[in-house]
Structure formats: C-alpha cells, structure tokens
Image 1 (cartoon, rainbow, N blue to C red):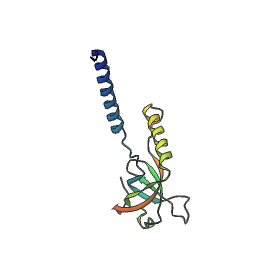
Image 2 (cartoon, rainbow, N blue to C red):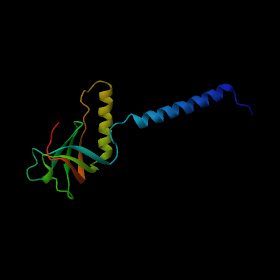
Image 3 (cartoon, rainbow, N blue to C red):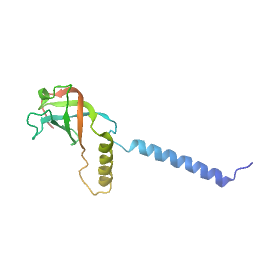
Image 4 (spheres, one colour):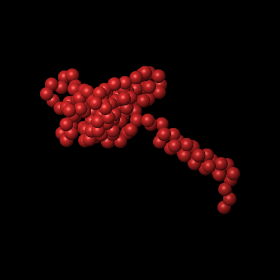
Length: 133
C-alpha cells in the first residue's frame, strides 16, 4: 500500500500544528494555575475584619488576596513584606475567573489584569520587616 504525497503532507502538517499549539498553550500563562501558590507582597489587616483572622496580601504584581490561616500567626507579620504559601480557595472557579480576565485584557476590553483571590496560608517567610516599593 502506497501513501499519496498529499496524505503524507496533511499528516505532517497536523503533527506540526498540534505541536505548536501545545507549546503555545504551555508557555502563554504567566500566572500560576495550581491549587497551591506562593505570593510575595505586603500583609495588612483587612479593613472590615474587626477581630477576625482575615488579612489582605497585596502582591508585588498588584494582585490582592484575602488570606487567613489557622496554622500560621499572620498578625505578627502585618506591615511586613512576606512570601506566603497557601491553598487557593475554590481554585477551579478562581482559575476560570482569571482566564476570563486574561481574555478581556487580551481583547483590550480591560486595562487592569490584576488577580484577586482568597487563600488559606500554610507557611509564611518574612522577606522584609517593612512594605515598600
């Protein structure tokens, strides 16, 4: 059985296009999509938090994260730049929301593409004892 040159060409083109598409998909995402993330930024007490364990982590990239922890004392790090590792709450919905924001930004429908999410912090490393740019 002999293959026609056009069939060989079509098969080769499908392989090349598939490879390029896979490569592009793996490299076009600068934001982490994993359930566990490490965010570096300034920790502050949330405005309406009162006595709750809710804090606001403003990341170096401009994203904001409402954070809490049952295992790490966040209160002692308020006003510090920290590297916080934690689990994104409802990561599937969060990632879908971020994909939609990315698409709007790519279409020039939205200028600010900063993330906003919720995390439960499992580890904190102090980067600096002050917040600053």
